[in-house]
Structures are given as structure tokens and as C-alpha cells.
Length: 301
Length: 312
Image (cartoon, rainbow over all chains, first blue to last red; front, side, top):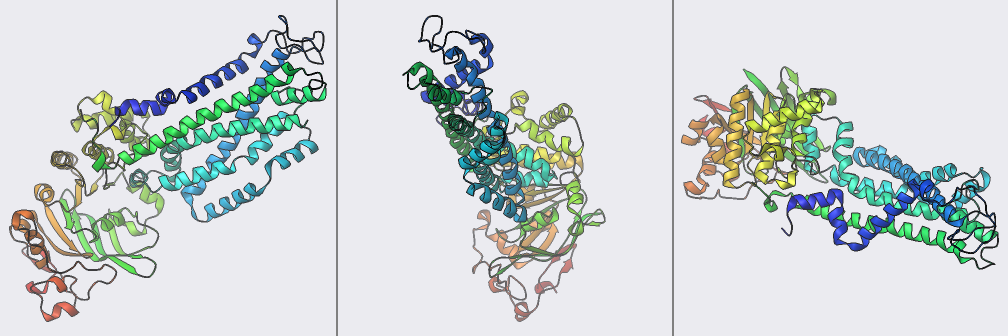
């Protein structure tokens, strides 16, 4: 036993200890927290209001840290408010996609048989749909708004989660404690949501985070193509405007580099976090293995 | 008073080509309040009997016969009825304590869970009742133990937690499937004392499935010896250990280390293709012609049942 058992588990739950051992993932967590903080307190942190206007095309200065854009909006303010939209789209899409994937995966893994066959066939069909082109078509033909993007992305991004959850459920449902729950006369519903679901959390959370990251990137690419919501500016939208309204031609790097950097750094921080969580999933399966009694020699005070 | 009455129970598993004859026409009476030890070598169908009582068998199983509990045939009960019976009326303690507990739930909660689900008790009250239960089981340092996770406990401790969680609902029948398997001497003693204790306090009957002779000698009222899916002998504890009647039961006793470690001659039977007649006859030193062709009847002598022509 390399480490005392309780602290190992605590580290797993709070993911603190794990993060400490991998500085990169701790850095990821801190960076993501900063982004979240910025998004939540945009109103306080932004130097100006989102609709305040100044002289257009100004270079960075003391009063406008990142200059102003074609409309005379302060770019730093825009960047700070843009984090709201980008994160919101990412997180809500991931919630929808993971939620769907979770429920379908749980049901199909636990009940198996015909339910499983049907649900997996549906999943296969969804896996075949080329996602970005479909989203583009939807965005072109429907009135584009962020809610639409969230809905469409969410309804397309759940397929891989289903596969992962299902395989985990198939593994867990054969384990001893599920049988003993059955012998105690617990209902199927209870077993599914109270015994199996908590055990899948460790694969769901990393998957959730990766979905946030990929949804953010998808949103940025859609916005850059001009299919985003014109009424609220995300980071992708900012790059789009910089491209469309002379930012690139005038070499105003302070206009298009910061949003690009923000997207990259934010996605990177999320990915780093999910890596460390995946690591603790491995650790978790180690604990599972350690439960086999002949190897179990833990604290017995 | 018969509490659990098994009549002509046959269980078969269909695998690819073969059929496994796991249990063959077993009849068994389990009286209320008694401890019956079901013993036999690995793979003789002991656990299958236990699992068919609570109907937890894989889909490729065919069960015949009747299992009466409280005047109801369990083999004909619906899933809903079974969920009412499982845990509340018949509790089963499964093999392998480490894997029978949910690894990410606190132990106190796992003991309290049946109360919340079956008795619709609020969590707080259930946990305090679980605490009482653990207190009775003499768990020391209760506060921390309630909040501990299964992997922080030893196998023996986990086994006791499992026993506790199947006991909270005061079931009429407890089925313990190899409760001492994989435990060291000390943990075994604890579990043994636990089972005897609980039985005495709650007045429930215990069906003990084991190949631990010490355990059954210690706590069983009656012993049933199984071989290849059939019960060969049922006898009172003292009578059995004084003088086993069936040739297999005798051979089994003699194969124990303290009785000379004599192996039983011949290979164990293949459960896919059991011998005709008496299942033990290919290995039996006392066999007669009849043994190979005819199934011996169950013979009652001095209140014990033996399935052998020697006593006919």
C-alpha cells in the first residue's frame, strides 16, 4: 500500500490530491476556474458596459487595453462578455448531450435484450450523421440563435457517451453488489439509479468535460462561418467580425488574437482537467480490484 | 413446523451443447428456528438451491418442482411478490464479501438502505437503526465505521456488514452462502458467532451453505450432505458427526485432515453427464449391482434420511 487508503479515496472524490500530483491538471483546473469567474462576474470585471461606444479602430491604450473595434466597442469588454456565451453554449450542450447519453446508456446496458438492440441501432444511426454539416444546414435554414445551436449540438453529441456508459453499466451490472441488491428485494429502478449510476460518475465526468470542450470549438467554428447568433457575441463571433470588418486587413492583432487565445486556452484547461479525472478513474478501478478479499488487508483498527 | 418446504426441485442449465444437471429431485424441509447446514463439495449444487429459493438464476435455467414458503409456491410467484419476499422474509448472504457491497457507498447507508426501501423509513431514522445494529454486532469506533467505505474494511468486517444489512429487516429465513469463504481463522470465528447470535435473538431459521465442517459442527442443528445435485443424507448434527451413514458422507469425513486425510477414490462426476442410478456408485466401495441401474430410495432410520441401498 503506497498510501493510506482514506486519503486516497478523498483524493479521488475531491480530485485534489490527484490534481496535485499532475501539475498540468491542477493548472487546468485553476485556468478554468478563472474563466468561470470571469464569465460569472463579467459585469464587475469589464471596464465598460457592453453597449458603450467610443472612437472606432483605436489601438491599445491605457483607457482601452485592447483597443476598440469597428463599432467603437471596447474589445476587452467584448472579450469578457464573450466568455459568457462561449461557456454557456459549451456547458449547456454538454449537459444536454451527457444527460441524454447517460439515460440511454443506463437503460440499454441494464435492461439489455430488445431495448438494447433498438437503442443501439438508433445510436448507430446518429453516429453516421455528419454532425458539423448538419448543424450548418440547421443554422442556415432556421433562425440562428444560441439556443438552437445548443439544442442541435446537444442532440447530436450524445452518441459516444452512450457507448461509454453502456459498456460501464454492462460491467457493473454483473458485479456482486448488484446481485446482493437484488437479493434484498430492491426494485430495478432503484438498482439502476442508486446502485449503478453513482458508479458510472467516474467515466461520465471526464466525458462531460470533453463534450464541453468540443461543443465550444464547434460553436466557435459555426460563429466564424457566420452562422452564430448575431445578437450576442461569443469569442468565435468576435473573430468573425474581425475578419469581416477589417481587423485582419488593418493588422489589428489585438482584435482577433485574444478571442482565439481564449478559446484555445479554455479548451486546453478543460481537456487537462478531464485527463486527470480519467487518471483517477484508473485509480478507481484499482480500488475495485483491491476489493477481492484475498488482497484486502487494509486498516482494521 | 415447516417454514421452507422444497419438494422435488430439479434445476438444469442449458449451455451450448450440454445440459448441466445442477440439482436433481431434491426435497428438503426447513423447520422454523433451526439451522440446517447444506454441505458438499464444490459444484454439487448447494448454491444453486439457495439461488433458486430466491429465484436468482440465469436465463438459461429450467426449474422444476415446488418451493413452498408460507403456503405460497415461490417458483410461481411474480417478480413483484418476489421483491417483497426477498430481503424482508428471506435474506440471502452471498459469497465474496468484498464484491457484495457497493464500493462507493458508505457502510452505514448500505445497512440502512433496506429499511428505507421496504419500510419507507426516513434516512435519518434508518441510519440510526443501522447504528444500533452495528452496535449489537460489537463494531467498535462506531462513528467512523458508519462513514467508512467497504474497501477500508477487511474481508471479515465486510462480511459482518453484509450479514447486518441482510438482517435489519428481521427476515424469517436467512440463507448464508459460504459465509466463511476466504476469511482467516479469526474472522471466521467472528462471523460464526455473529450468525449464531443473530439466529438466537431473532428466532429466524438459518440455511447454511458451506464446506466448512467446523462451522456446521459449531452452529448447525441438522446437516444435509449433497453429492452431484442430490441430497445423500440428512441427519442431526451430533448423530452425523458421530457416525455418518451414507458411504459418501463417510468418505467425506475421512478425507478431513484430522481424520487421516484419505482421499475419495475416483474422479468427481461430470454434472453434464451424471451416472445412472446412485450418483455415487462409480466411486463407492460398498456398491452392489442394483446401484448402477436404480436410484436408491430415501430411507429413514432413527429420524435421519439416507439415500442408499445399504440401509434398505
